[in-house]
Image (tube, rainbow over all chains, first blue to last red; front, side, top):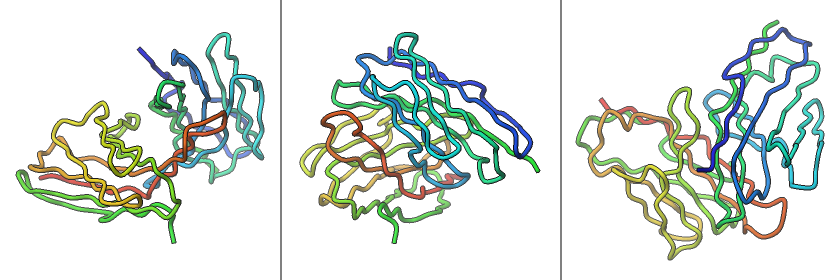
Length: 112
Length: 116
């Protein structure tokens, strides 16, 4: 069964600190992995996409990594800001009809 | 204006009532989806449509129905609402699934439904 597991479930950090969110998946055959940011009460928005051949990709203060061998991804947030407070969702897409499997998300709270 | 628009944004109704949530998009995408989100849980797929004549059940379709009236419009109906259908509902669209780097989902702002 295709699954996506995220950890931790929730995280509280102080403004300016760094953090790393984890995503493990069993989706096969793998097409790509996206990290979405969902602000409270809003729809998710894509932050970055990782394909099979990519190990690291940055988008401003967000850096995603992918290890396709161990089926793990991480999202590292550098110098956190209050506006980073949100839920971060890992979504893995397979090549069978392009179906996407969602993780339950990590809720990040950045405190001043 | 938003690329994916959902109406209503909030709705309170009573058990047994029929409810329709509407979604329209200006992205020109063929693929449209309805998801449900419960607190602390991930998004779960209710129905999806890859073109106007295509309707597919997702993982939690029981109690729901959909209508794809046009390429840009996809409606979700609850024929007889029940309290455990209280949730946040999202419509989403995506482009064609060919090649790498595809499949990005573009979400609406959500419709919060409360069934009393």
